Length: 289
Image (tube, rainbow, N blue to C red):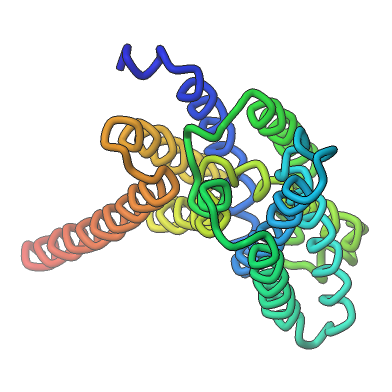
């Protein structure tokens, strides 16, 4: 473990990973409860277009050499989030239609921009699947800023987001500004995706927002328990994934996601085992009576 701390990039990756492990499930819980998990996938593909546009600018214009492509990815992701909300209002009876529109448009534009930049290279692969070496000081500052914004916003709007997640119409009738809260929430999703890109990668970021939540739903007895267990599963997945990635030279995004999948399988097994034990105990009680 001491060898790992000697490398600055590893300290950056762990700090960014801990923050990403906190904010991803915080937002992911509300996405899953509202059955909007695929929005994270759609916005991550839009982020890919933005990163590709940033890399293309770096390649074509020397003035953009010091420009972080992640900032362009953030701009695209926020614009995509606003467009999703607009489409959901336009197709009120078919709101899920917004997701494939944004997803296909994002991946299409991303592929075109990447091909215009002479195809894939090491930088693009790092953005797609995550890279602990690529996490620099600027990325850490960005992740910290996003982490503070997301955590404070969730804390301030927790009751409103909770009410809108379970009964949107009743929440609206009780005076909660549905449109404004939904807009803030979708912007938070866009920010979390861009903050997670360096650690997990664009193609896997939605998994970190949903898999820990899916695992916690197997065990939790309340919404607060779901939130706490989701954060626990996400943090252990990210930290152990980064450590395994460092020592075994594995892609961090894929390693983190596989550990999260392992948590999900373990919780499903534990739930089945608990149900079996409860069933056997009830049968024994009935036999005694």
